Image (tube, rainbow, N blue to C red; front, side, top):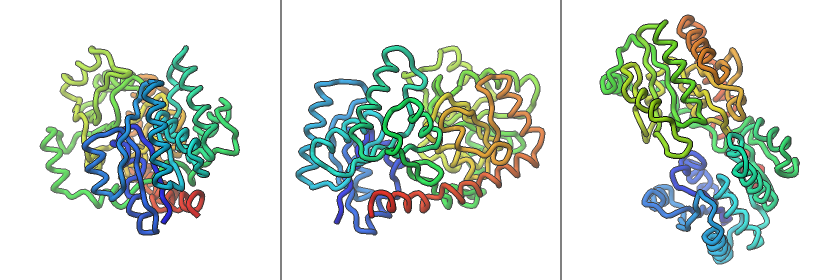
Length: 378
């Protein structure tokens, strides 16, 4: 039985990065281990998905003393358990994982590059993040870039040898469960409950967003665009699903507007966002950077037309004027693109249908899992 170790910094990413891969590959004879910062969620998820957890401090911030301790502890764990392949996710999880795998002599060390954090930073922080990328990449044997634009940016910035970069089909790290993310999977009763809970008139047009509410996601520009739309369009709602965060935080003025504006529904952090897509007429992600925005594929799989940017990652997630539209990260352009869908329901409907087919053809979980099996496990 081959032994696979995934290294992440927090356990909440596991359902998105791996999820049903645990069960799928276990049936094929693989045993999973996960190294991660300790949490109740990690232990509960390990019991649910039947992997072996190794709680270990993997801090988001740079802490040389603790990081070295974690690398050495993970190195011992790898050697004691005779791990065959190490997968590292996120900059810090990958750095710890690749270093421990390298020092313990594991021949297959896979870095999943989920995005490039330094893109929206500057100065010394940008230098440090790029340096960490290069160190991690040097210790990895293969690098899975989650989108074509991440590969292109990696090559342009010379983060690693180009031949190390791998794309799983058209992108992502885990694909989409297109059965679960389908309109047919949401009952009429569930939709009605959500409409009532959030006081949404069934005749309202709902523009939805899912993600962290931070500057990098273009929330400031989206709110300014919303102010423009409210002057011109009636009976619209902006549904914001996700938490405010201290890191890259929005101003108090913007937060107050989001909380107090009657046309904005601030749902906060939702554990299961799947049924919420069925409420949306349009999905928007005006982000400055992504790796590959899974939320766009989820929306597309639920037949929702998408508005996003040409930023890294986002640019790969739609087919322009077929499954969605690109917008500049500019309030006027965002408002214009939202209005174009509001004024042409037939186009919006068709783009939603096209989006689901786009997901089925390129991002279904089984497609991505087969790529992982063929490239790394055979």
